[in-house]
Length: 123
Image (cartoon, rainbow, N blue to C red; front, side):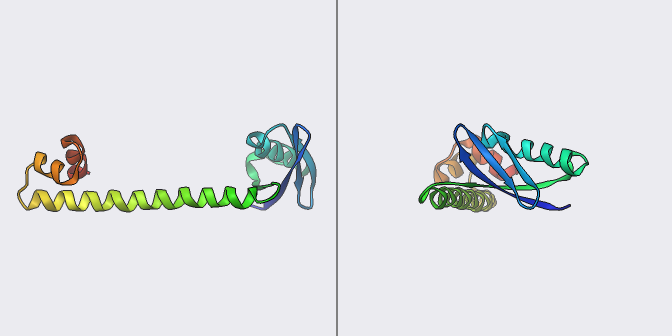
């Protein structure tokens, strides 16, 4: 599958979608841009819109693009930290149970509800 890179440039109330090596289309919003590009490619090149891999890069003024990427990176970091924390919580809950602590005691140690302890131990 060929990947088509698209530069999205603000143009009035629309986005101009410049498809590298193919052409230009437009979309009212970025949320509908991918569908518009896929439809354009299907009409221009033939095939099904789902057959095309599309990467849309919005061109933003000033530092907005860098700040948006930093925000996305922070979210990815938080998601990774959450996965690590969940794994550690499951591990210690199981080890505390194996050490003979009750569900209520494990809840007190981990500062979670007894229902959460049950989820951690049984997952």
